[in-house]
View (cartoon, rainbow, N blue to C red):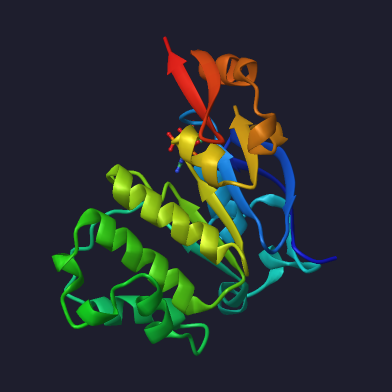
Length: 240
Ligand SMILES: Nc1ncnc2c1ncn2[C@@H]1O[C@H](COP(=O)(O)OP(=O)(O)OP(=O)(O)O)[C@@H](O)[C@H]1O
């Protein structure tokens, strides 16, 4: 079986946070995980990458990643956490090299791909929020894994940098499986091949962006929603 096959449940102690979340993904796909605050999106990514230990399985090409040692798992799946600014004094290049512990990764290729190669000798603390997000993505790319998970990669970014990141993810998804938690539904509608909508720890809905109906948004987010078409893109207009 090729691609990623997920079936997970997870509880923090007594508190059930993911209840039988199932989906699959194939190489060449950009999946967006969407859903309201507290739905379980970050928890789901942490379960997929093995930071948390869920019940169930996360199979990649038939191998259950949850049963692999961390070093072996890291060759196959990488996680880009929510951006928090680094306090330490690495250069950009050293920071990206940290992603290659499991592989003989391609630091140069990754830095060139995100446009930071020329600045590689600068301290990572010199980067702006958007540039730091690019460095985080370069670190994931340098690891060379086939599945990349990103938790809110566009939060704190201006629209220009957000679009730049989404274009990069789209390009990466041609040869990998890319799964991103996105709060911005318009970015999800525009860039994702498929959406997984979580609510209350369950998969509430799954489909292509073109299939998302306003009534689903209204039900899950408690807003009034309209979806219009602008220059061939579906655009969500929400109001309270
Ligand atoms: N370490 C933890 N211990 C206990 N409960 C937790 C922990 N982390 C998260 N939770 C709870 O699990 C639920 C899901 O949290 P999670 O961060 O996965 O949601 P999310 O969909 O990513 O939310 P957001 O959009 O606000 O980032 C929330 O109710 C949260 O309070």
